[in-house]
Length: 163
Image (tube, rainbow, N blue to C red):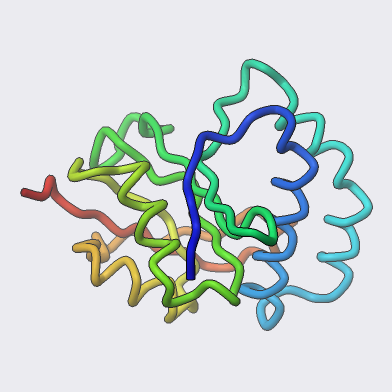
C-alpha cells in the first residue's frame, strides 16, 4: 500500500472530522452506544469549526489515493504531573490500513525518539499491542473518561527516549 504524510491544513477540516468519526466507529463501536455516534454526527459542524480555527494546532495526516486514512497529534503535556514532557494526544487510522505501516509512520512523525506518554482505553488490545511494540508500558495510572464518554476507563502508557 502506498501512502504519504503531510501536515493537515484548515482546508482538511471536514475530512478530519469524517476520518475521526469513522475511526471512532471502527474502534469504539463495542464500547459506546449507537446514540453516541449519532450525536457525534449531529455535532460534526462544531468540530469542523474547531479544526478551522487558526489557533488550533493541526495533526499530521496520512493519505492515499482514497483520501485521508490516518491522523496523529502530539505536543506538550497537558498537566503538571505528567510522566513525560511530550504527550501523544491522538493517533487514529482507518481499519483498512491497519498493519500497513501508516500508524507507525504517524507515530514516528509526531514523536520521533522522544520520551512520551499517552492515554488509551483500558480495553483496547489492538492499540495497546501497537504501543507496546513502540516501547510504551503502563505506569499504573488509571482514570475514567468523562460521562459523555460513558466513563470508560483508560490507562496511561509511558516510554523513555529511544536511541
